[in-house]
Image (tube, rainbow, N blue to C red; front, top):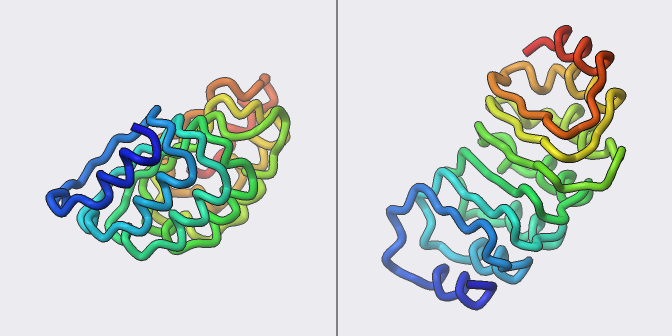
Length: 178
């Protein structure tokens, strides 16, 4: 549906009771996220899936600047080019503090542990119960830092498939406080 379709959706007056919105693989890019962020028709939204949409840090900044997602509990930004800049914008926003589920799979380059640094030092993860980081090729050092973080102490589900974890990383997971 691309950005134009999302703009039409965001202008609808009939979606005020929608609690779950899946828009994965619609190629909306940052313009589509901007349209969603500016729309006041999603006041009851609890779950938003924006995976596979070509979203970059500018789109994340629109999302977190919006006052229209105050009921959101689950957010998927997987397989977008969010990178550490987008994760930093998310981590410094009130939006992160209300999330129970966060999916950031396949969002960065190999061995780039910057998203782990941002997440593990965040003080806004107090409600997070489920975290998806698959396919980020984080490696043992980054995973060790993540698993040791008190910021993730409430996790009950963690997916780190495809992160080049070895026995050392598995040992760090066993020592995790969540």
